[in-house]
Image (cartoon, rainbow, N blue to C red; front, side, top):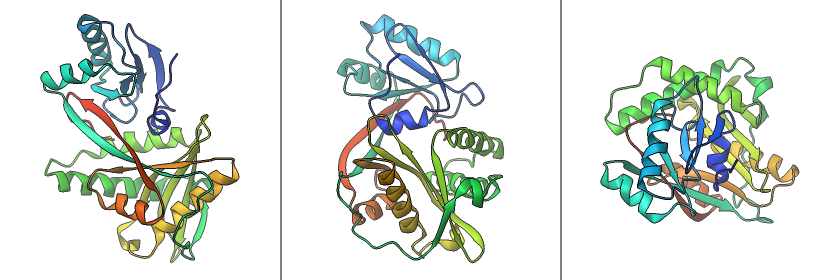
Length: 259
């Protein structure tokens, strides 16, 4: 069974089942087939258009409508999907090189493992719901129902079996959280940087990233990657902290799915 080229994509598929199709591999989360982060085709190397259509149809039967574009993906596959009306989405990958430290000092915040600070996921679930509402309002689309957020929370809870979440405590509250995962490649992956609205602008995100990077380096990570939406504010923060633009990761979606 192949694995995704991109460690961030691999991270999001840790709580999915994987199976080989005729010309690609499918990551599938049966409990939430519409969750784009956990359901996707990858290692897409079909011999011809008929094989591609076969795999797309099989994936669609499982509710999967997302294709990850990788270095090994033949260029004609992306062109074929774009011609058929699939929507392309690019995401930035920034990397803190091995041996390099973050360029800004860590703010003085208490950081604890999330399974200790927020064992029932109540605070993190509330932040994910806020993020979904803010994202949908920003994009001018109807706010997704709470059940979609519940599925997202369940996915993160399963990811916590493979990766480590950390929380900042501020004024007696969980102010934000982050996740760190050491990939088999030796690269650290920092994901899921969230800060509650009442605690933004106080260095919480910077403290979370510092802690996650430090723990990944303690675990043996060389380079550490972090993802950001194109044009979104967090990418500029990550750049100021010393993460360097590395590449863009592209996926194509047949219809809007959230995560």
